[in-house]
Length: 370
Image (cartoon, rainbow, N blue to C red; front, side):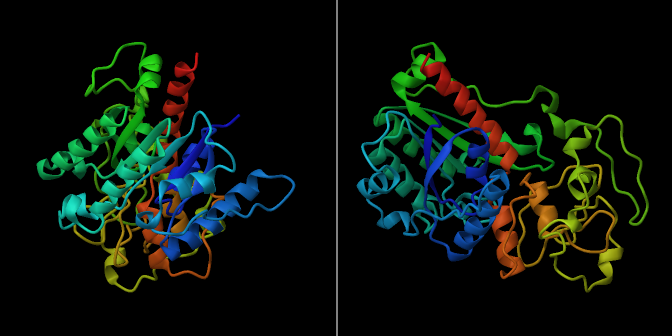
């Protein structure tokens, strides 16, 4: 039977999608931002329906209240009709601008940063068998934020969890994007010790077997091609795995313009769309991808979506979704602004990254029950 998981800060559900693909059952979701709710319900419904041979599946966000207004007992009552199961998990990525390099560094005192504290309090009240928290690497990289992170980890440890954390790069997990994310993972201490096969000290780190793909280790150091004149056809490098480049996402896996959301992009209006060289991502704006390189972090705003390598326009919604490793069957609603769609896309955890992480959690849980 699939292990149930509760999802907070669900957004468009990309993190959830990876856990579903790994075999977990997302039994309860929480999101209170209306555009994200609309995206989740449309996108997840279309994806789930594509897996069902017999009927249309209508996915709904379980609870649309702010986490600040949710008592743990209400969450458990909504998620589980009867008593709580012996094994269940909680996942979530609290809003991260207060910890990011591009944010105001308000940290745990910021309006968004405070939600991380609320989430940790919720975990301590829900007492799941395991949890996964996702956030930006700045929570660890910046000393002023690392102190906050360490306090939250200590709180979780004091509530009976063995806690580990790691910064993973999506590129090294097979996603054609240089995207680092911080993951904090915890298991009830006895469960963690059983799975790890050793006694764990109170504040011990490094015990969780984080996902890794040997072939892609150190992928950023490969001999990636430099810039090429726009409109030309650069040669494909032999030393670079094609799956780590954006080429399969933009053409190799079928023309994205023929898939839902494939013709949705900001209309070009500047001569620069034909002037920027392929692969020139040095500027603050008008960054053009190289077809045989990975994408910089898909983090878009104010219509500054990356430029297509060989077309005089920005990426489409579908192309951005593919760079986030989202299945084509996940479709965004037509009656929504492009800005809202791109915001959801770049806020999400790449599905393939989530799948590999969820797979590692699944394997660890099996060891705990052997």
